[in-house]
Amino acid sequence: MKITILGSGSAFGTPQIFNCYGNANPNNPKNLRTRASIFLDIDGYNILIDAGPELRTQINQNNIQNIDSVFVTHGHYDHIGGIPELPRATKLLGHSIDVYASKETMDELKQSYGYLFKTKADAEPNSKSLNWKEIEDFGDFSVNRLKFEVFQVPHHKLHPSAFRYNNFAYVTDWETIPENALDKLKNLELLIIECNNGIEEEQNGHGNLNKIKELFEKITPKKVILTHLSTRVDYDILKTYLPSNFELAYDGMAIEI
Image (cartoon, rainbow, N blue to C red):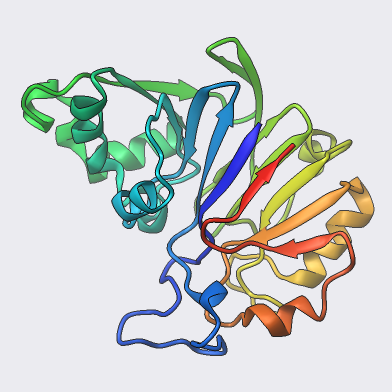
């Protein structure tokens, strides 16, 4: 499986609008972050997790040639702003795309992009269909004979879906990890997890390095990659605080496991 970090940034990207870099050094290209998203190539089957507002740019810059399915973690704009690109994608690819989300997230998508749930012609003339597939809040589901596990994590008033496939898991936009989800994060080769706040202690619905270290002690994955990094985070500075088996994500980062 090949994993590509399409975007490693938080809700507002780095820099934010008006070239606001915050703590991030503008001279380090690894501090240039689009909104968080990853792309999975599993034996030629292509899955996009989240579709933020820079989706078109991310797809083009990483030379991605196909999308078979999209998993949506939750309904905040930085994770769904690119969903309206999907009808055009089906037209150019010549096939439909399956979109998986929890009931809560599906309701958010319907509220934001109701026209996409009508006929395909309403979304994009000559496009193929978007197949909306609701998944459980906690449990298993299969995609093209690939078995995934899913659980939810609290984030403000929403409950983003986190996903596991074999020995890999992706968790974004989390405040705590429920006890019943810990077993789904054990025996991992790789955990990619949101670290929006870096080393700062903020009560804002997001994680930070200390909380991830505490989680690490409970689940002991072999490797951790921190993503969804805000302008609180400078790549080089946060890197000095990391244990040896931790890394920071950056846009375009590729991992094979």
